[in-house]
Image (cartoon, rainbow, N blue to C red; front, top):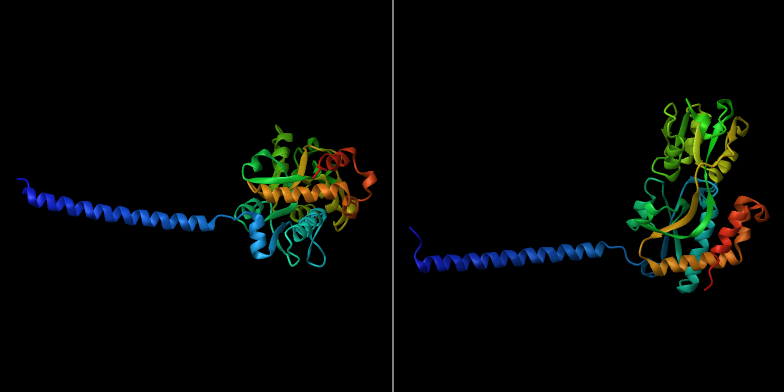
Length: 302
């Protein structure tokens, strides 16, 4: 038996009111959540710098000669010097004479995450430009070019990738070197690839006998060799098994900041680069034609 018409009408009206109130409450909650999410979005970098008076620069602690912690505990290296030039140009162009630099250590495992989440504004390291990374971040002009190679113990008699059969080779996971090494080792199932967290761990593995070779970019390996306890026990391969174009890393879609960074680099490449280059790599006159062409091609006009 159904409800009387008057009762049914009243029940329906009350249900409609409750539904309307619930719907309104849901809308309010959604609006609040949307506002909170919007508040968590990363502001344009230039606005962030103007408001805080600070630029947060990411650096690597052991990626010598590009980015490392010096003997005084402060960040040093070629990429560090370039980022300091960017900070100086921003002080002038944004009229922020008191602009401060905050250094934030990063690793290959967390550098992209820290950039995307806003913990750093610019990564000053030895990061290779790849299309895969471009899906998450953006890059500046190229700052250097290198290639994957090997640093091995003399006793291992390793000279090239082909000599790695039956050997232990260290490499940092989730890097372009790891992918290139895997491709170069295709079919060499007897090679043991050992993951290491950082460049310094690769050197310790060689010195302590846990590794026969360590794979990384050749410029990094050459610099690493100079810090070894006994360089005579290690040998740097002359072989390259990958191409590694380096750049500073910044957030995607932040065109105004990217333009400021690239303008600074272009000015530097036209005049002022030689002194910085020679501080870390030796005479610029001895640089390869490819390296010299890199800086010439990125000397864009204003």
